[in-house]
Image 1 (cartoon, rainbow, N blue to C red):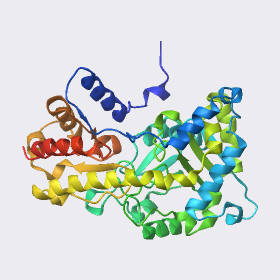
Image 2: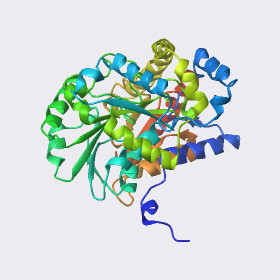
Image 3: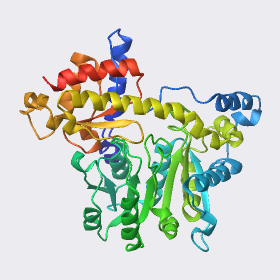
Image 4: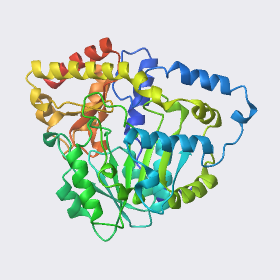
Length: 407
């Protein structure tokens, strides 16, 4: 059986692979501290669960949904977006109508968007460190990912000057992910203003704004966006959101795409010929759900994330590694820089310049610590740590990690 060249270009998700390996080791009775998790280990709010339970009484909840999602939910998604971001889509661009598409998770939403926009050899700019799936999705669609890098020394804020230098005649899309996975930061309001100014100079570029972590900020100021400074950019902006992170519901697979109808109509066509509509039962529950409950639900979760971030920061400082500390403020990750720690001396030999895979493999096999190699996010000699573990186990994991880094 000969596989397509298209699928052979895709790399396996290191995040999912290591998470599976850690889960297998735990099932075998080994003590594992799983710091790979891209999901909250909390039960969704009772009111949401109760709505799912009550909607299960209706036959319609088990039948096909409209491909783009129930109309009342799509309207609700748009209304919630406008309310939380402080924008008015009705007034944003004269003569442009907007709509939403409900998909099988945020990952599916982004795949839909790229599938509708990217032609062979189109360039798509992404900011490093980037979410692991962006480059693979782009390549699958025949496009070329172009990376604008950043470093721990500027708290993973990409250079706008470099962004502009990398825009070419082949550039089709720029993807923003703020709050950012894997760095646990979000771009400042000044950065967003500067980005808006650049985008206004290139009227053919489409902007994908991946806002799946929007409400998961645990230090002020909260995230802001370029279109709040230049609403006219909404005419060529595609916003991605969903319930996976903010409602602790990754397994329910509900994502949102908000965009001009010219694009959502085509996404509807693509989704109709591939996956059809998303989960009807959860959609019906969301039709009745009050999204304004979300901030209250997230308060104790944010407190938990702040607490774990403080544990990590204090441990690094107390062990003379405060120089690799930066303050994570959103999402639930921290990108640990091995290159500035003593352990790097043990891994200095080997092919290539990245040691993140070798370091993470030893951490897992010998110490039961599961982290994701930073090379998966385009960041050499780093690892992504999740901050979601319960405080006791997280403190134990940090203690083991510090000993390893000092070795």
